[in-house]
Image (cartoon, rainbow over all chains, first blue to last red; front, side, top):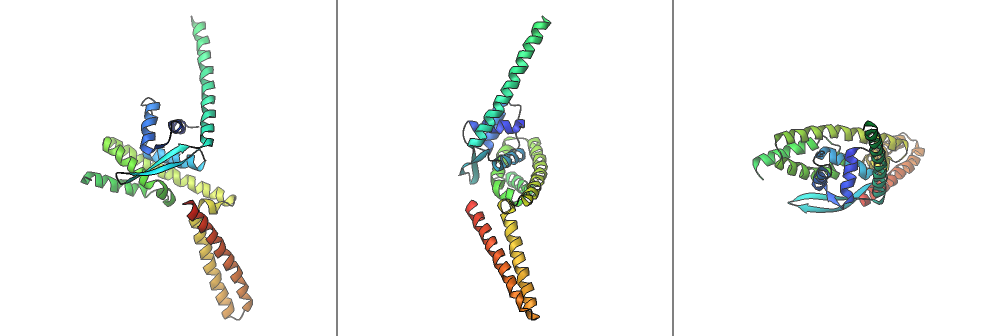
Length: 106
Length: 137
């Protein structure tokens, strides 16, 4: 899973959000390292919706503009959970090996 | 809306025209909202980056849709993914079969009327696809 996809799903794990909300949330989650642009975001949302990982939650009109809110589906929640566990296992392995390396160095 | 905002919106609308129609219908207005919010808060460099990102992703979306359409044809799911295209093709085939029937009958080949069964079949299938499309949208 690409980092942008992982971050979008993580943003939606906190509840339904609209496009600009996702961009702001992803920026915050990634500590200002990732700022999605509209083209990239909506291409990812379109693909995730086709894959059944997200769905439209509701639509609102704000300042005479359409705002569509997206939320995770059950499949999306499961996929994000699996990916988070996989990444977490990698992080654990990396950290434990680094500890061994540091111990050997001292 | 200020003049520069109106100009910017026109520019983004033109760029959104690079995307497939079904994609535009689905995300166009929503994207425009995000683009305008982002650009009003950002600088001209942000706008350039957004423009390049739109062009790049329009190409990628076209490629993905084309690829999915190919797989959909292979798996017989074309009517689900591209209903409007299927409806138009079925209607075109029905019209063409009507013309063939007309020509055959005019030449005295009355068995040609049996082709009308295929015309009816195409119209029924086009109607079913249209009904599904209407329910979905």
